Length: 617
Image (cartoon, rainbow, N blue to C red; front, side, top):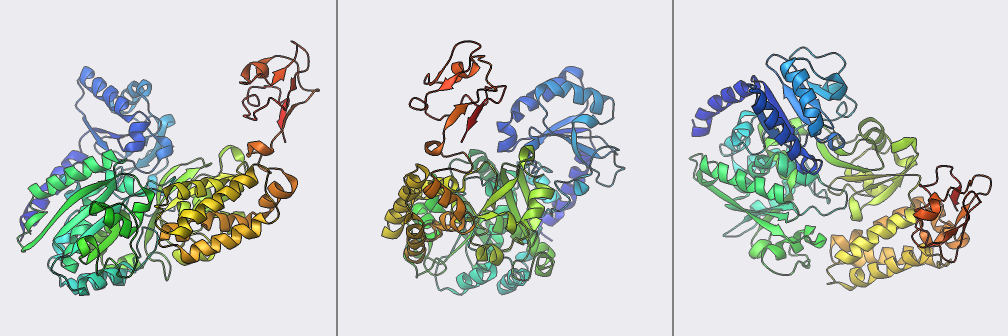
């Protein structure tokens, strides 16, 4: 029996005792802090101290409902706990009066309740049945918003480090076979079978092997890895250790972008706690297996998300992709065999080893097993983090989890896979989300960012936005990416400025295909995807920009014109004051006019007019 096995029961008893105490828990992930969570925490501590209340005050990470931050959970012994959303300091007193002192939930401020076997309160959605969570599964995200991410005791009490305990008693190949049996594919974008990758590194010849965790999350609108690192850092460490034992490595590196300071802080603390308990370092659990992990902070270059550019960066070289082969499994970090997976992949491993590969394979589709964490952003009601089984449709995520498009507007497209992915239209809402279906539709899974767009979005402008991003982030090593993305961007700019020609569309398609087939790394090979998918599904918008010199969505400023309707203008002068370039003129109580020669088409006047007298075309 290991020391951990001896202490686990004690830790679990202490955790249960803590859960049975009156408690107030504040969500302090990055989203919660940005929304004012620290001020809410200070207000709660002040109220508790000033009233002399016997209640514990703790913090957790984001539970996934970023749209409801700052979030506060209140739990009393024998009762269901209630998560309140949109709680600012001015509402703290009301919560404490009603729920802590009065022992009744403040229903009008409640988001969900977590029963834990207790009788549910009336009028508050139970978490598992609520619209946001009903179609979710929670394994990787099971501790997010439920435990203190800076407490190794909370992690152990909820099953943490049971995976490495089980793994070190297994044969290495049996671990790899269990991962293969699970069917898990890399959650970083490419979707390569994880068990096969581990097998390659296990079989590779080398006196030293490495485990590397890719936490260089750089897609616009993506924060899956950050949320997992902030909310469950020990799961990533444990997954890396299991991988290290399986392939014969004794050292791991987490490459995390420096823009994630809270994630780095909690990772460092988790490493320190694990080492103190003998769960990391030398002779782990008395088995003779040694493993250490260090963190390398990346400088924010998007190309360093590509595995070989990342390895170069760790080594202190410029972050530029290497020519492959050889692949990292044979010559990776410091030219040694290296197993490289992303945050979500490693966070899944402890669950797979604890519960078995068949448990994981029971979720998802035939070729895409398990669950996937997605970030929901854009023109939707419920922005946040969700974990869903593979095979769920895009429409289910949009309507059932994300709460539909804001302000009752029409859905137009969803960008899946970030700059490397593509834009899918309304007719693809029934598409099952799995690796192969998304690729066949012209998009990709990517790391899991979903950006939803409404009818006011210009798809040519969207393609231009992502091409601008990838062109800036190109490392410049290969000509197709360095020069090709620049030419694509120049063409898109010309189209949105009203200077497009009929030849631009076939030229865009031809150049995009050349880049895809000849660029050195995945950044260049996938950079044309936003252009190709918008041309595939929204060609009419390109044609309108080129042939009619019109932007159907009314976004591209060079193609817009503003005018004032005579029958609606009362001459109030509000628009005149709003115009930054004095393009509007007119006497008081007389119809105003816009001088098109002066108008910079900023649109500042439109929302100021209460009479909807200003129109754009």
